[in-house]
Image (cartoon, rainbow, N blue to C red; front, side, top):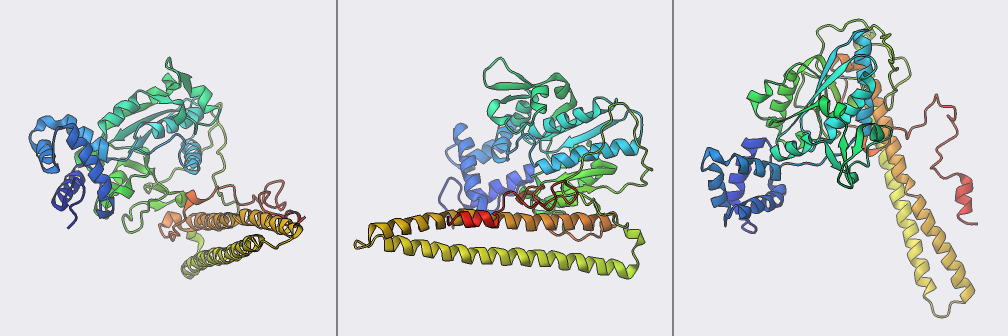
Length: 461
């Protein structure tokens, strides 16, 4: 039995269950230390000498709401930033354009929800992007932002941020939507952005409150499901499905997956970036907007430019053959990536061994100074080679980007039928621009960050 720390086995299980029922967050055994530290902090601040007395305090009466809120704030995760996961922000902007195009001319309010808004960076990011797109065409957007932590929501409502947390905001958003605060090093969101976001405290496991969240065009639930077990994930996903309008979009975090959890959502051309959709009862024919100021849709990351036949044109036997081809290509890319990684690892090990041998030789007392100097120069060149070999990481990124492109192609073929295989692409492990654009003017020139033969020769000059 583990008895070290503030929580003994019995107290750990008691608090684990208490927090699970309260928030849905599952503190598994490997997170025990984290829970121990956080419970101890709250217990000592309340004058409780042990975990048992602190739990009794929490359960003593209904007047402990303030302390329960403080505990929830302590045990929940608040990691966030402005314009986090830029690939997803870019696709969000593109989808806004698509919604406008589908609807045609005429104003329409859009309703979106940031389900775990933390200190507000996510919903304010969405508000800035939406305001830029909608402001000149008469459309409006209302963003609901909720979090399980009342203190964090109270902070988010202020729309006030220290300079060091605003570095991720690109121009011209920063100069347009943030103004200096009277206190040095702080900025405030402008009134038009503040008016777009409505904050509230809500737990995703509170079924009664979840039923009040309806008719959403888009729901962001990023970096939340990873803290739940599968039972809670299924319940939350079902609730989010009900929250969306038919045709509405669910956006999950890059590390999240629907696999084995929910079959109601359909994949989209952007499901490699975890954009899913509640099937529309019927999709209206696109009517291009002619409203003044309408901007054409931006190209999404890894956009497939080759025309793809819709799945309805594939014969039954072709469906299976195309899926097999997708899986074989994916397996081939995985194998190639593994081979590259293995080869680079062996090469780096070999160069490292040579470098160590040269260092040993250089230490010989009877070595002529000229030879020692030449060996030192060679060793420096080897060190430079080892640095350049970090291009191996770039090779891995390109392989993963190719799998992302394959996922998008597959989604475009099968996505509407919810049959596209999930390739498990890690879209945060590479820059979407890492693959050369075949339509670019400099296509075929090569990657400027790779070593040319001249670069390699220069190492030994």
